[in-house]
Length: 148
Image (tube, rainbow, N blue to C red; front, side):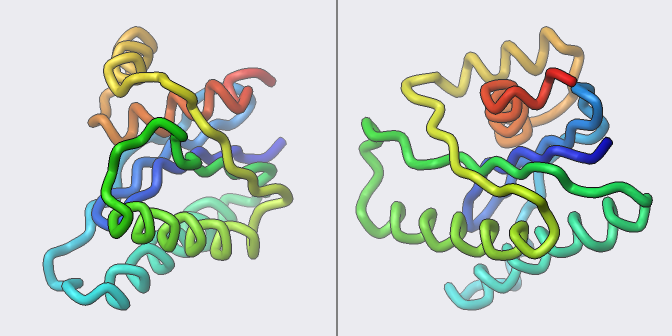
């Protein structure tokens, strides 16, 4: 049995939730250090942390990464175009890095689900995480990662 990872992408914070056998084994947020100020440096940081999580943390444990889900744009979003372009770039970098290690990588739109719903789900499950980790957990549930 392998890992399944859900990512809540961003240039500044990447929420993640790792499932194994339907159970959450790790959840958290990777926060970009302030030293990465240029757009290029921010994308390099995204690539680096996803690579480190997949290659340096999970694969040495002797398991595979079965699936990775990345949150897709929500159609009703009202973010400025520049922010959406940065998000799209972060999604692309996560997709590329995860594709090297996972058997399947896909995008999933959470629809009109609110951040508060994700936080309530995480709290109900007894998970200690911030809003980005909670969003990744919610995404993993929608992807069916909480089932064996």
